Length: 118
Image 1: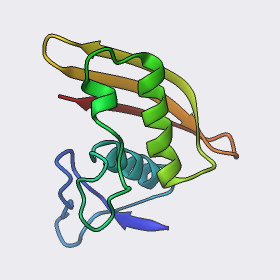
Image 2: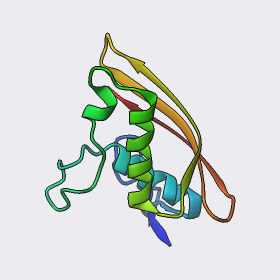
Image 3: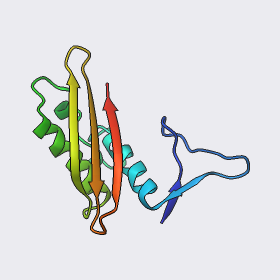
Image 4: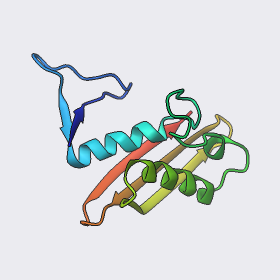
């Protein structure tokens, strides 16, 4: 399956003559980042898409809470993907969070992902 390539702002990337495309693991990564960057309930066409940002940026957020939200977002993209490694850091003073993680699918392919919320 192929999809339009998106830049860091979520805009479609246009090459010199055509819209750039992504596929396979790059498409999965892009979809995961899109879901993780969507606050659950914010998109009017699908109120269930996204994760609860309050569980990533609120007071008393734990790594377990973050892992649960990231796993929820991943499952929205592909139920066969699972978290292999996760490192979560939170900056309470600036109300920001960052998660670096690796996911794998049933074939054993690895995708490295970093997502920030602020």
